[in-house]
Length: 52
Image 1 (spheres, rainbow, N blue to C red):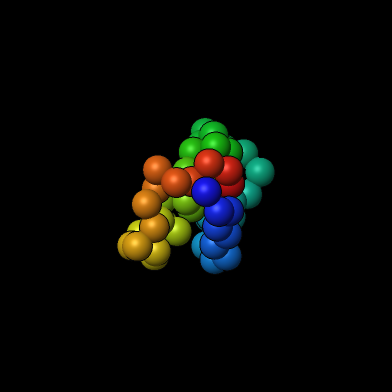
Image 2 (image 1 turned 90 degrees about the horizontal axis):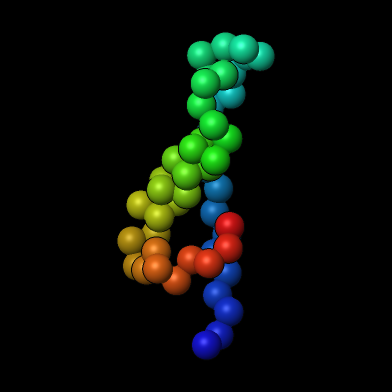
């Protein structure tokens, strides 16, 4: 199988130290960004994603 690379970007929210996002784990923020990228690439099969 051939390697495929997709280049796109979305931002996660930025907060203050000990602010409203203090209880949100970094991997949960990253998952939110990845879901947004997947929505922006409807032809992409998410099963093919193996590294982020």
